[in-house]
Length: 161
Image 1 (tube, helix red, strand yellow):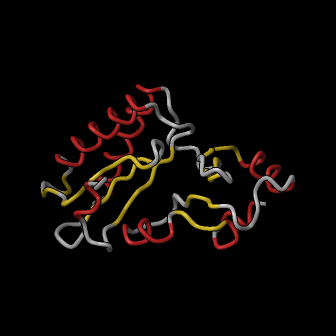
Image 2 (cartoon, helix red, strand yellow):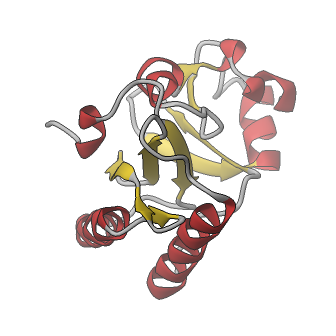
Image 3 (cartoon, rainbow, N blue to C red):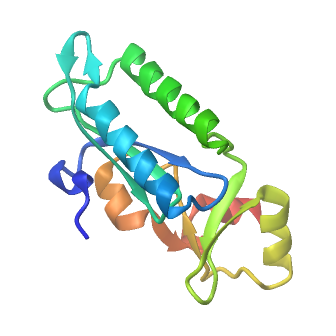
């Protein structure tokens, strides 16, 4: 399935907000719709931003801006944060806890756990250096496409275990 993000250049700046849990299909549709509506009206200093939004894996909200046309200003970024906070409050979902980590288990199922549980899973061997983790700190769309999902040993997550 194609994504609205596919229309933007690899150098586009992104922000990834990971939900604390998987969103239901209905929640995913709602978040995707509201986010796409938000970016269609997103402006910086009265200039429209070339932007897109999508929800990946029913848990990661991605906002993207192609800054070759206009850069996202501090106020426009603050507006996006406010939008995501309001959306999370409406759904009862925390999109801002950076001490939660998402990974794929051996069956490919995605889980999101707190830092201590992540460390414990590694110590117990349920997570290994080859386990696939998601990196919500990537900054450009090209990175999202290439290294958003990668082995734990190749990620900053390795410092957490």
